[in-house]
Image (cartoon, rainbow, N blue to C red; front, side):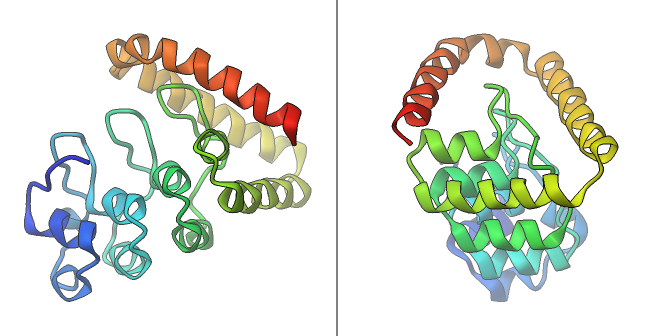
Length: 180
């Protein structure tokens, strides 16, 4: 994980709620060299109390790091169920968002063998699909596709470097699907 660049990054990484109570909206959304915000760091490290506080302080859960990972992706990679529940409860997560490798948070959970979080994300996706109209679902998917195109434009070099990883991930994902 990248070294924290300010005290709020460090506090989010270790879950120091006392320090995060001082964070402004700007500080809750400040980025380190990997474009990770305190929100992303709290989610990546499973610091649910810190994550909840940062969201109350104006932290943006739609921000991404250099690999296009949202807080939901990072929590899924780490298998941090309570962080995922917190993010889903905030209501601003698009379950169809993809990172630069073209993977959703559910894909990342499966790839990293986080079975419990994968099941949680699968249930959330099923609930979303059953509670929304086809038009609304298409709107969410279209928004995710547009955001992915923006990521490809912004981080094209990163995407091409990860292309081999994407193919390996697709193979693993297919293997996981077959064994399920």
